Image (cartoon, rainbow, N blue to C red):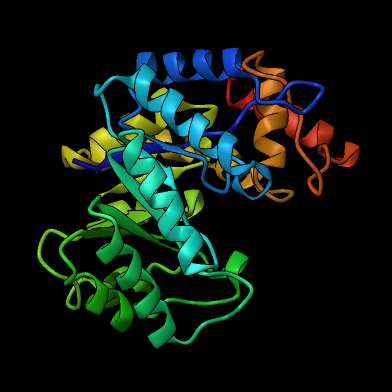
Length: 291
């Protein structure tokens, strides 16, 4: 059910920093047209830390309603409070998301036992498919493969977004997780190799600006056409790197604005892309034929 190119969708905003619902609608239509395999609504790239709970759920609801079952919609519902994560996950189920993505609790730095009990509690409280999200570079906590293996035995914990960028993690995870457990990359720069070695897809920032190309890479890998996939992925490498010159989603929103897809506004504490990167990013856009 969850495979291929899963876009970590931005949340467009107007100059007054309200959510730009029309731009969101247009982005979803564009992704459906370009072959994106699934949406992740209100993850890190969707600025989940600065949306209100009401906005958070409304973005998910609108994406779910517009997609109308054509591809899966995965709702970002992670929190560093177990109670809050349960409440967000319940709300996502209510608006009919297909699954939820739950980042490891950040800042409070739980132990491996704490991570297990947190995700176990959410899984027991809400009967919806749940995907773990390990991104220690942002959370200051690393969910170890043994913990993932334990959690994979809970029926509605169906996969993990592994964003360490460490390809050895896939090797370590494979013998520990339950059969059919989904493993997807959360690191665009290493996603090709992750999928080549058995990963099921990518939750991608790059897909925001090159949806057809990222989807094509995923399709070709699934078909065993690795050389053809590598050619496209190599051409995308400037994006895989350039979209992280500052904290995500600062660069990707700047690029989308240059493409005319949405305005590049962000809520504090995020700030617009530093002018020192503009020439570099403009050259990247030109090289990748985005405009």
